[in-house]
Amino acid sequence: MEALLALIIGTLTACGVYLILRARTFPVLLGLTFLSYAVNLFLFAMGRLVVGRPPLIDPTAAAYTDPLPQALVLTAIVIGFAMTAFVIMLALKARAELGNDHVDGMHEP
Image (cartoon, rainbow, N blue to C red; front, top):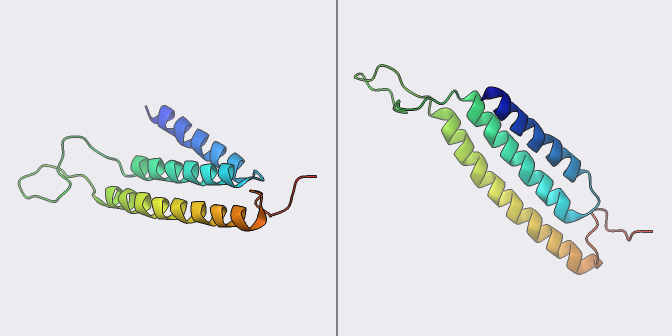
């Protein structure tokens, strides 16, 4: 299971980096989204989530789950959504003003 999760995180990261290096704005946006998904999965994997244990320290509980990774991923999801909305609006504004969707604003030769 760990190898599968590592493979998924690696694939998302590789696809994200590849798409960020493209010349159009939509693949760059998709690459940023893939990278944020990879980071969220990585934080979940590093958090050692345990099924069936409470996320709070309770004197009656034998063990507990660390709530910090869950809080970090929730915060990362909100920040990722805001970043995606900002980049979409930035790309639409650049498309309206420049007439194309290239990252550098130049036409293809």
